[in-house]
Amino acid sequence: MSIWEFANPVRFMRFSGKLLPYFSVSAALLIVTGLIWGFFFTPEADQFGSTVKIIYIHVPTAMLAINAWVMMFVASLIWLIRRHHVSALAAKAAAPIGAVMTVVAILTGAIWGQPMWGTYWAWDPRLTSFLVLFIFYLGYMALWTAIEEEDKAADLTSVLAMVGTVFAVLSRYAVNFWNQGLHQGASLSLDKEEHVADVYYLPLLVAIGGFVLLFIALLLLRTRTEIRNRRIRALQAREAR
Amino acid sequence: MWPELGKYGATVINAYIVTIVATGLLTWLSLRSARKSKETLEKLEARRNG
Image 1 (cartoon, rainbow over the protein chains, first blue to last red):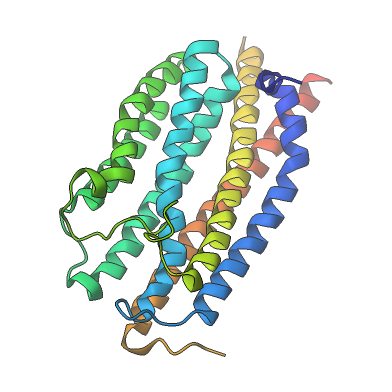
Image 2: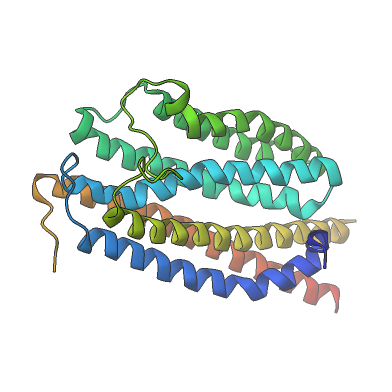
């Protein structure tokens, strides 16, 4: 069975309809477990006090803010190369999820930053690249809304997704590119010396798993809605003739 | 049961409230639009099939 078979909207609807309940339930279970574990059963950190508990919401949402755009980049590339409508609609469906995750990451970062840095906002490389990423999300969604002809909208938004990928990557590696600014280094790393202590690491992994599953569940749900809306427009156009 | 959050209690709670409200709202809006589009499509297809 090839992955391209799911480019067929009927097959995608059938398959995603079966998967959606599993992703939704496991997302809810993992998020609740990760957040309860992190909030109630982890100690304060020497440097951060109880604000360390914000890590369980800030890190997963920040990761998704970046990776939702990376997913949109891949889906847009598939649209541009293979012209599969489901991939263009999946990219469109992912944008509001990514935008909300970016807002949550920026807001929780600001709330966390105030007691740690003495300010809600600083023009730090990582913070600024996240703000630019959020503006790209808004521009991407606005472009879909502004263009009536669907294939043309998919083409132009795909080009925007390519350009915005630079900022998505920049958001991830900003602290490495410029060794300055207030934001600390990555909380997760393949190098065990670099990432957070084990007592925070395990609930963080559970919370990240939950948010990733939530992203997949919402993506499937919203892509299904986009496919249905496309069919509705086609039927309405046929009736109008 | 409730953890000792010290002087940063309001900071931590506010961050959790923002996240829960935003993700809850996103989920609710996604479910609502999914339900609406499903109902509209079913009506249109029923009308088309007579």
